[in-house]
Image (cartoon, rainbow, N blue to C red):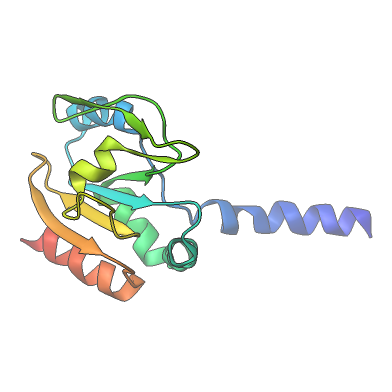
Length: 155
């Protein structure tokens, strides 16, 4: 029985491992853009946002969407309230801003249209020259995202 379980795990593991969106970090973005310039997707979320968790699960479950993103975009997953390191983006430095027991990263506020409190999840899509082409607050279904990303690629 133990051997059967191990065999099934080894056989099924690729199905679960390969259908993940492959993120880059802000630190790696400049290097990645020099190697292979692509549009950039920035997904801003928080750990307490249940909608964000459901949405991420749904997006990663859609293999066509995962393939579309991994092949054609640089994807940054950005936790707005737990990321504490300094981030250099578009030539500017952004820090974590603490307000006691919690806080928010300045970059999340800079990217959000609501400067007091961003709406989560927040999706920012930039062209390969880092110009804003999509700003989307709230849930993005896999179907909506595929349609929008295909429009960007076909433009």
